[in-house]
Amino acid sequence: MRWSAGWYGGAQPGRRPAGSRTVPGLETTWTSHWPQARVRSVHDDRTTLAVVGQCGADDDHLRDALPLVRAERWRALTRWPGSHLLIAHSGRTTAVIGDLAGQHPVYYRTDATGTWWATAASALAALDGAPVDATALAAHLALGQPDVLAARSLFRDVHRVPGGHLLLLGPDGARVERYEPVSYRPVPLREQAAVVRAALAEAVAARLDDRPVSADLAGLDSTTLACLAAQQTPVTAVTFADERLRDDDLVFAALTAAAVPGITHHPVPGTPDTVYYAGLDDLSALPVTDAPNAYTVTASIKRAVLDTVAANTPSAGVHFTGAAGDAVLSSSSAYLSDLLRERQHRRAWRHAFGHARLRHTSVFTVLARTRPASRTDLAGTWWQTAAELRRPVREWIPQAQRPAAWTPLLASADWMTQGARLMLSAALDEAAGALTEAPARLADWTVRQDLARVGADTAGWQALALAGHGIELAAPFLDNEVIRACLAVPADERGAPGSYKPLLASAFARSDVLPPFVLNRTTKGGFNALAYAGLRQAAPVLRDLLGPSSQLAALGLVTQEPIAATLARAAAGQSTAQGALHLVVAAEVWLRQHTATTTPWWEEANTHVASA
Image (tube, rainbow, N blue to C red; front, top):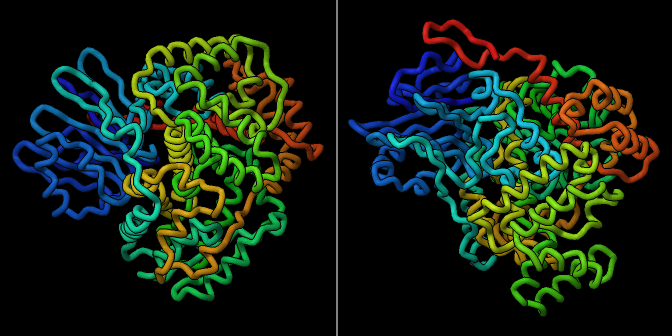
């Protein structure tokens, strides 16, 4: 796994990351398993700036930014295309800045002699064998929003730097500061469309060099990236085309490849093994990741796609995916709660009518689902959720039928022991009481949490692509500037029911990037058929995984009866809590891997390896 770490303190540390390189100009900062081309730094007598990862700035750009470091204009350093970690040092101050989506997260732990920081919480836990934080893991499973228990990582005594914040290290110790505003100044969609197009074009161009380029060619988001890349270099495009999906991704992909010069298209046929949960009887075949990730569940599908890429490219290259496109380009109907809160009743009614027509329901049903969230705020929701956790578990209904909420309580919360629920309830009460920087709009909070979740999952997919194929995965919709450009457009414009992804359509209308039929598309593929097929096929493996030997069960985070009922519903073809089950399975796999795998995170200064 690729990771970075650093030390700030009076004495020299007695260890360093195993197999690491020192970052030039930063004596106690290291990278492990990162290629040398992805680690760059510039410095003068008192100031150093380093980037780790894919960064669109060349060395001259970095050198020109040294005055920004000296002036501590941290946010100005985060405007380059690409996805990367920044380490800025000036005088006696060091700033460690991750990306907005959490592909380069920052964690730290402090003792009397100084502070260790790293992009892998597991590595910091391995310094002294810190155990998993059961409360933080409960929040991960029951709430699915990384910033609820913002400063807690999944390991005890390892602190997390929340999204939009940086770690500042100095003589007075370590502190966390916000560098990104809670919400952006709203810009009308038509005015912002050109900015979105430019940000996406720069994000794609930043990844293009002499490596082979491949891309998913499926929905509108991935198709946009493939077409942008094809303007500059040949693209090997792939479409997962399992006949059980019954969607039109393959039809649109073939039409796009025929219309866009530079794209060569290869369908990826499904097999009996390309379903959710395949391969979980052999966890050693999955790469160890720093956190649970959703691609544990879909690894066989992703491998099939990457196998096709590898078979049709001369060497390992960069592969574009449209991950997070849904989050930044559109919005769920939960933004209606914001319109109601702001007393924009006429606009709320008009939008609710449009959403009702799309969902073949009544406008009153839509408004009834969104109204409760308009009458509370983020802290109020957490107090309400804490109270709900202290009550008996709920009867299961699909999440989409529950009222919209700032922090929805997932079905997995109802699978926990009462002790675990009370433990999480107390943590939520504490978090609500300490909350100081809450957004005013539900849509702003929700999209940031969606991005943090997708970013963490994508990091797991990147590990899968690197470990199995040596392929670099690129997710430009998670770049800082793309996020900022898209989220400046209000949610009620991004998610307006009258058109499909109007921001992207406006950004690329009358351009030569996308064929018109792509922008006019209103359909989107889904993987439900493969999810249910996988649940039926893998039911014995899942019953064993989440059975008496389950590590989640040992922590009180799952109980047998509801898990068995959920699997039985799936085997019978009935609707079930798929999202919650995915979270639980991924977490169980992660726990088992960390228990079974001895990862050499650190080595002594004399290069003696110290294993976790």
